[in-house]
Amino acid sequence: MDVRSLRIALISEHASPLAALGGVDAGGQNVYVAHLARCLARAGHRVDVFTRRDAPCAAGVVQVEPGMRVLHLDAGPAAPLPKEQLLPHMDAFGAAALQRFRHGARYDVVHANFFMSGLVGLRLKQRLGIPLVVTFHALGLVRREHQGTADGFPPEREAIERHIVRFADRVVAECPQDRSDLLRLYDACAQRIAMVPCGVDPKQFAPGSKAQARRALGLRDDEFVVLQLGRMVPRKGVDTVIRALACMDPAAPVRLLVVGGSTSEPDERATPEIGRLRAVARECGVAERVTFTGQRQGEALRACYVAADVFVSTPWYEPFGITPLEAMACARPVIGSAVGGIRYSVVHGVTGYLVPPRDPPALARRLEALRADPAHAEALGRAGMRRVRSRFTWERVAAELLEVYREVVRRRGRAGSAYPLPPMAADGARSAAWPARRAASERLPGARA
Image (cartoon, rainbow, N blue to C red; front, side):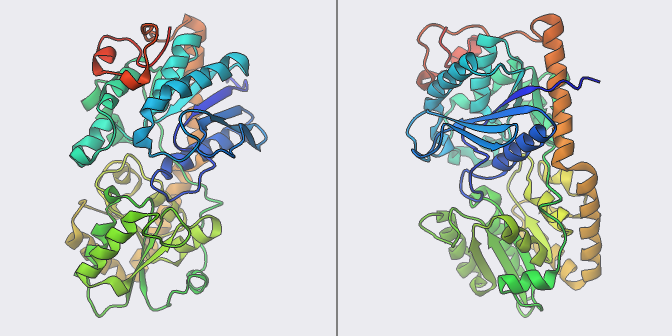
């Protein structure tokens, strides 16, 4: 067995492992990168996370813990920007990354997260021959299928993703649906797809006293508490949960706890989606039964899971979804949309239930059934906890990804280049002008020769 320590570069252009969670662009990818980097570092590897500087005061290099650093690269204004607006700044990000790679540590492998980081990773592979692993976290064509014209990413995304799929050494699918989408929509090579899920930290998320958690949160003991937690954006389907509440027995003491947002207190100016959801609750006549808490972190976040009777996640689509795993780790049953990664992590009838997305009556029926049978709900929660501990810990995820890294490093060592390098782009090609035709002609978008 190869036990050599690796030097690993994780690229995550918009999702910093240092970011607070719950905002529009801070969610599962931030958690993924943070925990993966820590687990790899604690296993004896050297890990640098490259992300965009989004604040003037952000240090160039942050030593998070032994073996793990975060490097902030200048690309566009040192201020928060929606990820949909970052593509024109990836030329600068790639140039800054290339400078760091040439004048800093030598890396054995690059693991890029999201399509823009994958574009930067291709540039590094092209120039330096470093093997490239990519996790997309979300695919543009899948997003467009569900969001249509509401998708704010530039049209070049599809061509860039196809280019990455063709030239990356490995593409990581997070669940069977993700793998199927790569094959169906992107003509991916099946032999170059590795399926590795997301994870959860069972030390951070674990069962506890429901009564104590409710006292801490100011919730009544006699309420049936439904928890929804995550990013406050329309595609997460929080309005489905609110409309399901309106389908339940109006006399029953049911409380919907909605956790998330850009601030610690629910602020409609900072998080406009909260305002939209409050309007939905008023329209449905359930506003007094819905509590918005704002963003929660650490022990306060765990308390929300522990205080709940059931966790609900009903997005329109979901590449994976980490919050169901966190709820399962806290021994809570999960009702989720039968989409993407939720269909993989939640076992219908064993750890919770799957319902169609955007179907409030179907969700309401499942909620009423669990409210009527607390013992069954508890049994589902215990089964979920066992499933998480056996399959979805970050340590296991890191170990599986480490095998992927070692494989591409070995292949490159034997063959010089495990897979074809993307051809060089013309001198002066800039990311702001990445057209689909450049990717179609098999030149690397945004790279300078």
